Image (tube, rainbow, N blue to C red; front, side):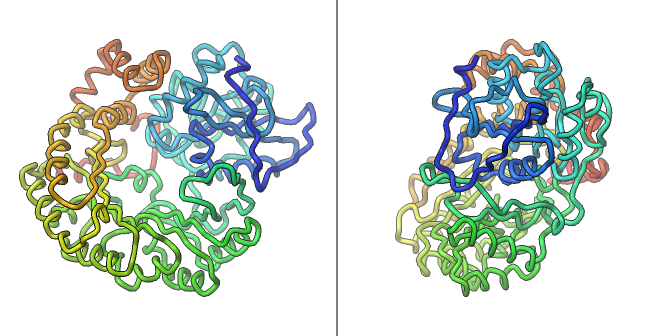
Length: 517
């Protein structure tokens, strides 16, 4: 067991040297992903600093080495079994499998644990939307945003009857997962803690590169039909420009890296964002800008983004069918997209990434492919091969979106369509990347699961964390699992344990509208 947890210290620019006492509450923060990816999690950064600031508490960090299939302890070689509380951040459903694999090796899986502690608590966008797939895996799930509950969660985990104490918290779901918990969320993002002293190592470059990571906003005003994050994180909130400037200035000074990595689902929906970016340019601070909407990609902004040092521009139209774009929340003109691509090429971006989705209900595949072929032909004036890189994903139905009523099996119907896209792309000068339809299907099976899928995830982890393990687990799955995989849900089970404040009537009516297109 101890060999499964290896100490791997890095030469990090910032760590907290806190002298612990035997009576201290010991809290682990586990990211089920490699170190360089974990660094980009603002929860990982925030929780480490915040928990260590609490009196009588000490935090330990853990990541997962995918190549060696084991846990790396970043601070001390302390087995997670010796903790009082293990916090696990799960932004994506497929992280559940790595987490389950880890807990199995540590004998910390909920249904096999021999003692109450450590309490294993999961949180993140995916568990907030639907905690049911974790019912046999973890002791509790935080519904919503961590800042509102973290301190109370930590101190209650130190009590003798810890699980009972934790279950009394307003947005923490425990035990049988049968009660309804309302989402906790930060009303004023300006007052939420933001990590300035962010740890990283020069030995392993973080995903998105070096720089101060800055959460600009949460949620999104557009509520695109396919986007679970915008629905789960609703309402749209943002930090004032003055607050953002202070975070960036302090972060740049501390990290000694004159670069900011900005996080936002809709960056240019934040008031005065252009003003802030121009100020960074004046101060000689580079910026990494996230994926932007087509209508936000004006010439002035493209020039600004390029001047800030960004070499790759990312735009997310999601569909090339202009009429359909408005219906899913991505309303734009295809001519505007082509103009932006042409201008990005002219001013010297290395390349442009586009995100597309196929498999929207009510959309003709033939029409979709015809528009794609026309789009490829329209790019012939761009003479650099692979300047445009398109990532094409099948539509993955997710909880708390209008597509939540689609069955997971619907994902597999896109297999042939993806192949047709590849065939068309070969005749053009674009690079096409497609998500493996089997992994997309596995993601949908977990995302839309009830309690019964928890056993499937455990079986998957027992058979390895690759696709072979998933297929074997699905063959052995219960009839309940096979039924929703094939038919979907009329009455989604997550309604019975989560209240996100989203009207069910809105989801029903928008689902009917989209399916009738």
